[in-house]
Length: 132
Image (cartoon, rainbow, N blue to C red; front, side, top):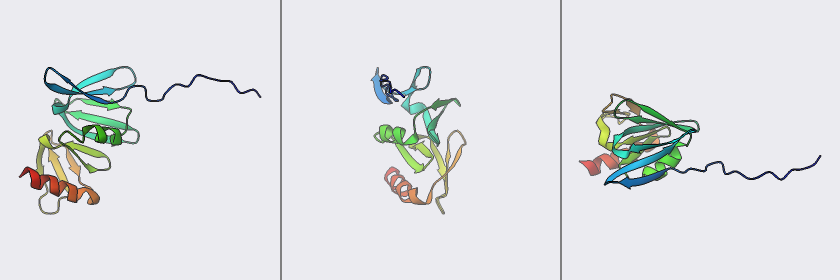
């Protein structure tokens, strides 16, 4: 059996970036066929499903990305996003309401209800205390 030398192709050729155009910040989101340019202020929340991420936008559309939520968390940590669950990263600008008694869930402006994990409650409380 002969081993062939095949060219090495990087698995992730396009990375996720934040770019500023005309004073507005955009997130460049690659999918399998093209790269989407999405205004950061239009992202309500991101949902991680295995090795994919769903970006829920304020106009009701959803963009699917083949990158993990961890990648988006590192890119968006400078923006006003908070990871409240292993599968959810929310934009604090779209937070409508939250369970003040037990801090079990948040309600976003698009009426999505997202649970807050036990381990992320302190981070959420600290962020809410800063906002108030």
